[in-house]
Length: 227
Ligand code: APR
Image (tube, rainbow, N blue to C red; front, side):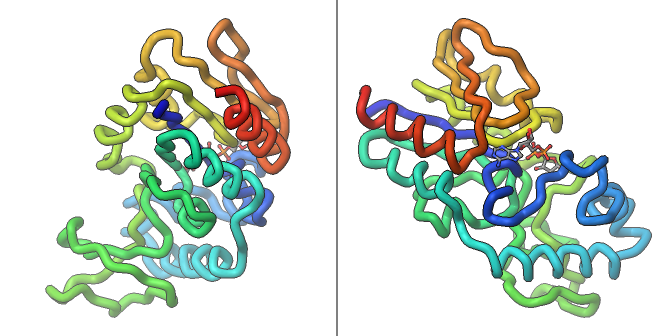
């Protein structure tokens, strides 16, 4: 069975109703990203950060996977599919994808501020005074700007196994995630689906300048029929 590795970004969830990051002048739901998504922002105003993620969590619980998330599940009929997502939503899992690696953390999880291994599921609001079992404040299980990306090593190893690489809805500007495609074996066919692609087509890179809900089901159909 061939392996398809899929790298997804905010664009795949846009049509579910979750805003992308860079389609709105560097503001993220009205906030400077550094205020709400950095260790410095957390030090300065933890209530603002918690409130921001509480809103995002509520929003996530009110939206659903779209046709693009669902089409990727169909690919599993004939391929070994590994999804590496920069998204913190759980829409790939809810659609039914079985192998999902979250590079930038998960909105529906929190972790201890003193023990990064102490992670738990969390669906309600998180507030100051919510403690882990060792009495330290809990924080969102999100990789903030300036923090290490613990899943990067695993993601690199996955990309090295790719027979085909799909890249969907990402501006490819945030590193180290943006560098992942360079770990694919030489001459691996790459398909990029994004209405505003930031890179150019070449011999191995095929650009499908469409929205995910249209471009992904079509490509999946082709990949299932032309094995
Ligand atoms: N279908 C497919 N792609 C779309 C759609 C859509 N309907 N709508 C927008 N896009 C594309 C945009 O053209 C853009 O290239 O999605 C991309 C979104 O880019 P970003 O907002 O930069 O999101 P992403 O690449 O996921 O950001 C990476 O940056 O802020 C951090 O940690 C955060 O994981 C995030 C990382």
